[in-house]
Amino acid sequence: MTPPSERTPPWEDLYRENTTPWDKGAPAPPLLEWLSDHPGEPEGRVFVPGAGLGHDVRALAAIAGITEVVGLDLSPTAVQLASSYPGTGRETYLTGDLFALGETHHGAYDWVWEHTCYCAIDPDLREDYVRAVHGALKPGGRFLGVFYLDPYDDDHPPGGGPPHGCSLEELSERFERSGRFLIEESYVPTRSYAGREGLERLVKMRRI
Ligand SMILES: C[S@@+](CC[C@H](N)C(=O)[O-])C[C@H]1O[C@@H](n2cnc3c(N)ncnc32)[C@H](O)[C@@H]1O
Image (cartoon, rainbow, N blue to C red; front, side, top):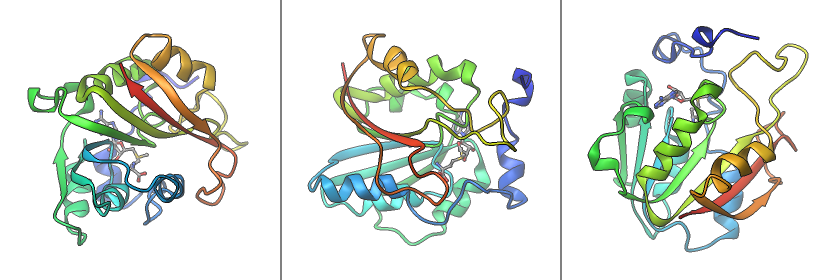
């Protein structure tokens, strides 16, 4: 088991060195699949924690009913690079810590989009993650996420990471049985990055 102190990568250094194997240079395929299956959604303000280079932010900002997509990342270099891509003008990229969100983010969003932030953080911080995204959403707001349930193989066994896997049972316990969210949709996406086929789960929830 990796000690907790080693479970948080030096994100800024990795972006500076261009050591970013998680960055595929394109929006997450399960997001694009969900968007094409749900015309007219999402709407309003969207929050993307751990947005990296912002490919998902820009895909969301292209949806007509969206007024702003705020992509937050710990790494100033990631934020700077994300800002350098052409967009719609509805994208905002911020450097910051999901676990220290300022007042302006509290109850400020209609939707949260999660993609490879939950699996990137130290699993001991997952309760804080759920609290943070719940706090950022307006009551009745929606959390839409693709969870990398099983990122493990021979080179990357359980206990290493990130990415850190999770189970459906854990998601249900943390998000739903905690009384914070109601799961509305949950399925294995048909479209995934190469190598992640069948290993992810798309989950949509309503914030209580
Ligand atoms: C695996 S990367 C995924 C980035 C992006 N979602 C993607 O798919 O390319 C995880 C991202 O989360 C960011 N991150 C980690 N902990 C964070 C925190 N506490 N607050 C904000 N961002 C965080 C990292 O800097 C990194 O960009």
